[in-house]
Length: 196
Ligand code: AR6
Image 1 (spheres, rainbow, N blue to C red):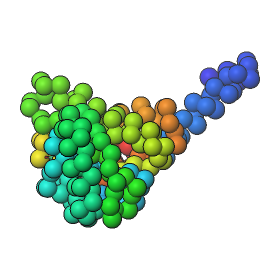
Image 2 (image 1 turned 135 degrees about the horizontal axis):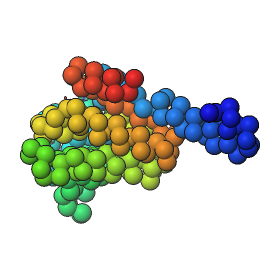
Image 3 (image 1 turned 60 degrees about the horizontal axis):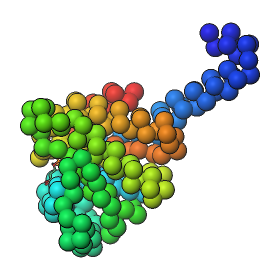
Image 4 (image 1 turned 90 degrees about the vertical axis):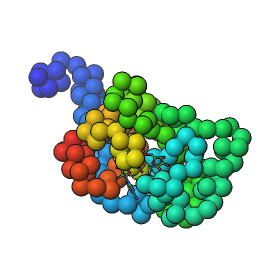
């Protein structure tokens, strides 16, 4: 099919090349690593935050501990000026001592059985994060598995939502490097399998 089309017009060649370039870019720019997100270098680290931007456990706690008090001070300022961060959205702060320029605090949904729009809210948390990455013209971002800890979102559908949303952005911005950082084997294996 490729050969026959390329023989027809030069335009087809350009189209085919562009198509395979985008597919190749997606394969190389979404990756998964296992470990602690606070040790992985990127332009922005995404935090699985809560609406009051005041979490102290899970990945949220790890990010604030590793980054130092300047991050919470920045969260306090946001809370005091613009208020809480709605579920499905995200805000940006400095990254303190973390190996990043910014922390993006994204608020995923609490799992309530799947009938409360949780899937769309989770996709919204990922989309809002990338909107901030693009607004700041950053080129790399690390994500934890938002909502799959304390908030109880089932891991398999959460991974599918995260990967689907990531692939959608990369069609618009093939140069963005997205790294999913999984703390536990279970999530890591799911992402590895889905990204293979
Ligand atoms: N690096 C990468 N991933 C981590 C790390 C780490 N250091 N620590 C935990 N995870 P959770 P949520 C994984 O509970 O479900 C907080 O209190 C963890 O294994 O941190 O979105 C907030 O303040 C899981 O897969 O976030 C909110 O109140 C994933 O990160 C609430 O929890 C998310 O787990 C948010 O709940």
